[in-house]
Image (cartoon, rainbow, N blue to C red; front, side, top):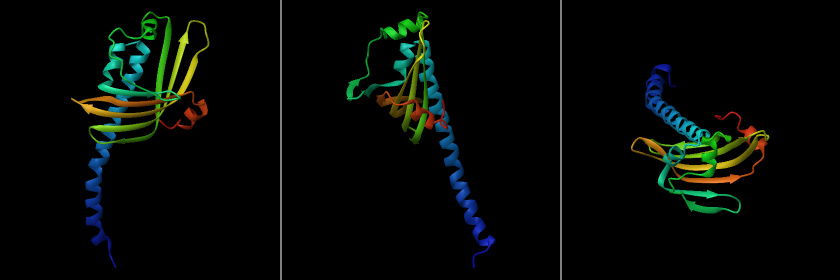
Length: 167
């Protein structure tokens, strides 16, 4: 019958091998959390250059229902919405919650929801909730979205169901 003396070396070995992997996972999740915080900042500030920097140069968007696919717009002029944000005419925001986060040191697949809102003048705040399915790569030490799939107009209840995720 195995005793503590015969099991202890194996337990120590297992812990020694799994602890670095857990630390690396925590580190990568922290990097990805910082990435999504940067995405939120760029939207809130109307920072078109910052938004574009979060996407790989060959990024692909899949949006809507029915689905539409397009390459990431390359225009340096930015969007009219970003110009209104910079002018103080509107105050948008975006938050993310995740139901699945798969990654290694240079690739990630993040699945969850996005909550976009916008304050325009005295109008009531507008909220929109959507599915977010993103494939990211880490290039030159920086995370970038390579493929992003969005499906909008989901119920707020779906967002609340992911309340244990990050906001």
